[in-house]
Image (cartoon, rainbow, N blue to C red; front, side):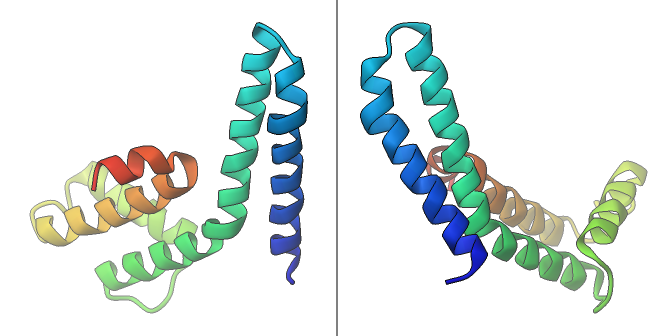
Length: 121
C-alpha cells in the first residue's frame, strides 16, 4: 500500500466518522459547516486517488497536441494558455483543441465535482 493509498484511507475513515457520528449530533450552522468539511475531505480523497493519473493524462494529451515528447505539465499548460490568448491554436486545430479541453475539464471535474462531470457527458 502506497502512502497515497494510506492517506486516502485515513481521510475516508475520518470523513465517515464525521458524517456518521459527529454530524448527527450537530445542529444548524454547525451541521452545514461539518458537511462542507466532509465535502472537502471527499475532494481530497479523489485528488489523492485520481489526481496523479489525471495529471499524467493531461501531460500526455498536451504533449500529443503539440507533438513534443518533452515538457513538464506546468510548461505545457503555460504554452497552451499563451497560445489561446494569442489565438494561435484555434484556427489551426479547433477539433483537436476542443477534444483536448473537454478531456482535461472532465478529468478535473471527476475530482472536484463528479456529479456535475457525470451529468455533462
